[in-house]
Amino acid sequence: MTTENDLPLAGLLVVDMSQFLSGPYASLRLMDLGARVIKIERPDGGDLSRRLYLSDTEIGGDSTIFHAINRAKESLAIDLKNDADLFALRTLLGKADVLIQNFRPGVIQRLGLDYEAVKALNPRLVYASISGYGDEGPWVSRPGQDLLAQSRSGLMWLNGDESQGPVPFGLAVGDMLAGAAIVQGILACLVRRGVTGKGSHIETSLMESLVDFQFEVLTTHLNDGRRPPKRSDFRSAHAYLSAPYGVYQTKDSYLALAMTPLPKLADLLMLDELAPYRDKPASWFTARDDIKRIIAAKLETQTTGYWLAILEPADIWCAKVLNWEELLQSEGFKVLDMLQTVSRDDDVSILTTRSPIRVNGLRPKFDRAAPRIGEHSEALRKEFGL
Image 1 (cartoon, rainbow, N blue to C red):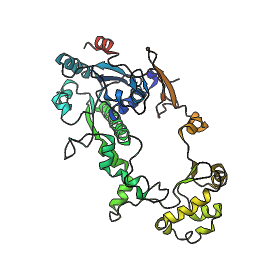
Image 2: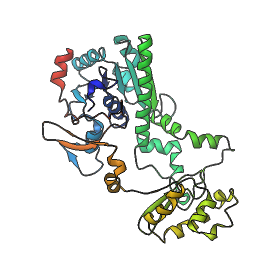
Image 3: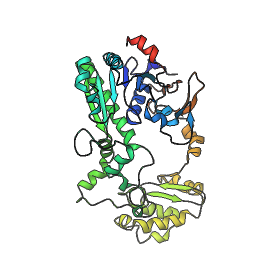
Image 4: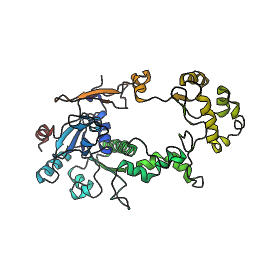
């Protein structure tokens, strides 16, 4: 079993002043790689995501999302309006390796904890900032919330069918992508610090991360006359890919078909109706909906298992569409060992995910649940002389 001391970031101290998702996701990933994460929280309520409910389930008084994204961290309660607490926080930052913050632009400066101020305390510190839209321009003061950032990014016009209008992702992709991007920057700055001895300020935003997420299709748009993306109006799965790319209903479930030569698929499915299109690749896009409707009608006649038995041996890129219960019961998921139970001394216990990263063949595993507000304040103040 991998222990914290085996992990590549063991010995590094991360002070996480962020809340909600993007920053805490970043510190979660650093924690999974061995870093010690001290979460700074307001004494009166803590991280707002403690009350950000995805369902009517709460554990130990907090939301499941708070537990999922803050497992194995320590909580230090700090009142940022209290001079003594601010002094204690500055003392801690003087001993830290990484600081993560996602305050709205301007707030961190008013607290006297902007990069230049903290750099004076600790020149080796890697200082990471996440915002909604960067630190200049007309959107700076707008709420940096995931759905709103998705709305401004153009991303919603790539999802769903053409007749549906804009369709958001069912996940906080802006938050997760910004968190992942800032981790990449943090790790790069830590490498640089190992060479130069100097810290750095690394920045990203939800908007920058969502634009980067679209680099493939946005580059196509920028170089093909700026034609707007046109989604299929039937079983759409990608605005820029031709038939048969999509998800189709079968007799008992759903089947996904990826990039597949139409003539080969027509032969395997015995679809004479595709004859007008099979040798005209341009039509696979221009007649995309008509082709997909022909395929859909055929696939509905048999079960997913029946079609997989024909298509997979022929090296057709396809897969059954699994729901969560089917995923959890599948051998492909079980062999990854991606779940763990974390707990706390007040009988809180939660089954959650593990790190997606393996180190030397092993996936890090932790057993400590997310902290109560200020759970570690006394011990941390004593340890660091705060």
